[in-house]
Amino acid sequence: MITFSKHGTALCPDCGASLVYGTKQEPAGWKVYYECNDRCGFEQMAGWVKLSEITHLDDVQARAEAMGDRWSDRNDQE
Image (tube, rainbow, N blue to C red; front, side, top):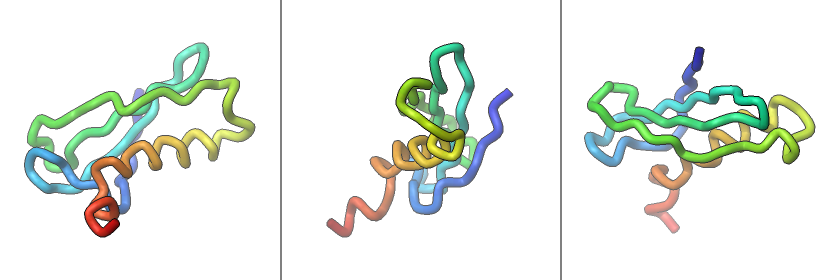
């Protein structure tokens, strides 16, 4: 089961709504997924967090959230 959390600034590239992210635990780490909070159909596997690269479970959430910055309006201001 994947529990999704709202990303603070990431916006759906298809409709402009906010994005949510979730992680799915696998034997060697976690897959990170993003999808549109308004369910317009946008969903994408954003990346992978390897078990060997983290020291605490909070690191998984921080890395998963950082993967969503590619859809963030923060990138427009740089």
